[in-house]
Length: 402
Image 1 (cartoon, rainbow, N blue to C red):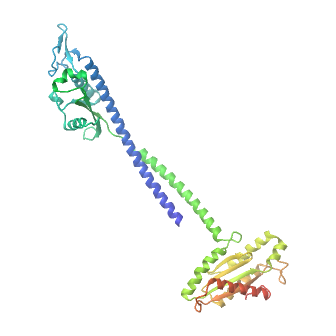
Image 2 (image 1 turned 60 degrees about the horizontal axis):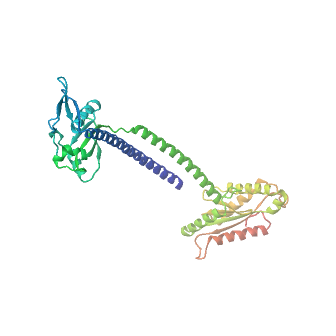
Image 3 (image 1 turned 60 degrees about the vertical axis):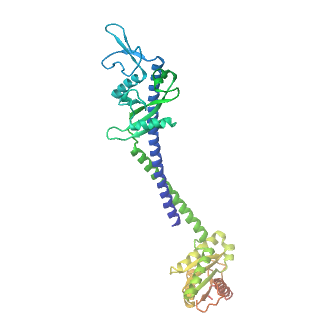
């Protein structure tokens, strides 16, 4: 029962381990998704930053004026527009204007939205949102970048924002705002469409499969251990030759039954049995035949007992002992005689056991009434009395009950 309970506890522990493993893998999957989204947005920011730096190195670039690209009203420079001929007019595009145009293309083509912003914007539309303003304040405190998932009713997305630091080339336009090299003059926010998708079904099925295989292994190992334990227990409590209880088993039982007899004031009886002339049997027929004889006699004694509470054991060598709880002297004498008679009826040949020339038993019986016991009474004394009675049976000619 203890092993079965332990198996159930191990199965429960394995189940909890599978649950923990599932959530650990699920959580790591979400972390991996976050890292992927974070790195993707960071790379986009780096590309934008590199493109802006290229524009800054050239002091701005000139592009044709079209319906989509009109001169930047917030750019203050002497050579903002250049006329090439009657058909071509160029306007200077600074990094901020270029960033806005790239943002428009990215939104149309890929649904990626990014916004250049500042706490002191030159262009009103560059004013930060509440989220962007919070990030810009964090950048002032030393935070390098921000990124997290945003859930809304439209499209789940990943928000990323990093600061724009003032470099020497930037001072051409931003020195008038009081910026110095190294100052954070703003930032770029990026909204990337990104829905976190973790295939939970394969993850669940995988963990259920692992759990099931583990349970099968635990049950198999548990049953094997249970059988091994039962074998060890049997070896500890049963005689390996005769397959009936051994002396240790008997000692445990008589201690319990004797105390019960004293408590309930009920009689308890013992029968000590010894195979007559067994040494001569071994000398005549050999030890192999002797072992077979012991097994037959043991089974004969066992089969003579009918009550579930009656108990027989191999006491040592060719000696056997029978414990009969709640049995009077007349009752034990009857059982002993029945055992003696049954062994005799088996007619196991023994030519050196005269006069019967068959295997016989000498039996000694004793009884404690459970009432007149004194403080010195013990089951060891009861065993000694049965042993004395058995030797008296030997002295009186064997094959009898005393």
